[in-house]
Image 1 (cartoon, rainbow, N blue to C red):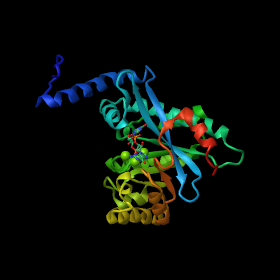
Image 2 (image 1 turned 135 degrees about the horizontal axis):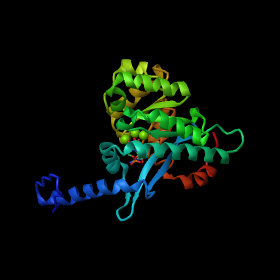
Image 3 (image 1 turned 60 degrees about the horizontal axis):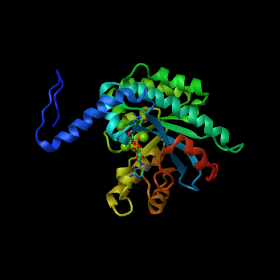
Image 4 (image 1 turned 60 degrees about the vertical axis):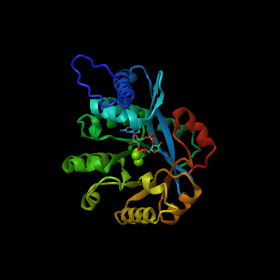
Length: 283
Ligand code: C2E
Ligand code: MG
Ligand code: MG
Ligand code: MG
């Protein structure tokens, strides 16, 4: 059972809840040292053109190599980092990693190949942090990555929390030349009027609509509606979680521009990207 530390109040409802509770505490405590101990890693997942499959860019996804628990999923540690504020420092680190990597890949591309983009997720707390703009500027400056090659992903929840702040920040980023995407689109709530006012480039269809898209008529209708909406607003669409050729083909036929998912590549360590690219057509 969990033991209470002085000053902490712990409610254990039944014995089966205890192991979970203590592992949550463990992650919470260990995360404080993860950055200094260089246990965080940036993985990258390819995003390819639906038509023809040329690679357009990569999404940066954070991993934590815990010394004894192994690879911890961001679904487990991002919420902890979000709650204790560490996400701000971790996110700044991620921005640096992603920009540096993108510059390194570019050097390996054949002459004349289109520049590769790198997409970085921003959490709610990061988006609200006054240092964010400076962190983004620093990552671009230190790496030399052109702003046009960095895409920032925020969710609807983040975008809608403080409309004035969002509009102002997105306009500043846009003014620098960055690309802006709404992640997990369709799973949050967003006002269509604001979608129009935000200077966005991309809507990402959440994988919950993609998983059963070949058999579930409702998912098909929703995906098609998102694609039509995006195109009417002048935005392009990336589908997430595409695992089969049938899903790819269906989304391509619906007009979805880009595909991301295990079908084309799982998230991989930065060191593996060069090898993956060498086996892939330049766009
Ligand atoms: P997300 O931004 O929506 O990222 C897409 C997630 O879908 C990733 O999970 C990716 O590995 C997974 N995925 C991609 N293709 C497939 C597929 O074909 N099948 C299946 N089953 N899954 C697929 P991951 O890497 O576990 O990340 C989960 C979430 O954690 C991300 O969702 C994002 O919200 C958050 N996250 C990850 N890295 C960062 C980060 O650096 N900063 C912040 N703030 N959040 C992050
Ligand atoms: Mg994302
Ligand atoms: Mg997503
Ligand atoms: Mg997600």
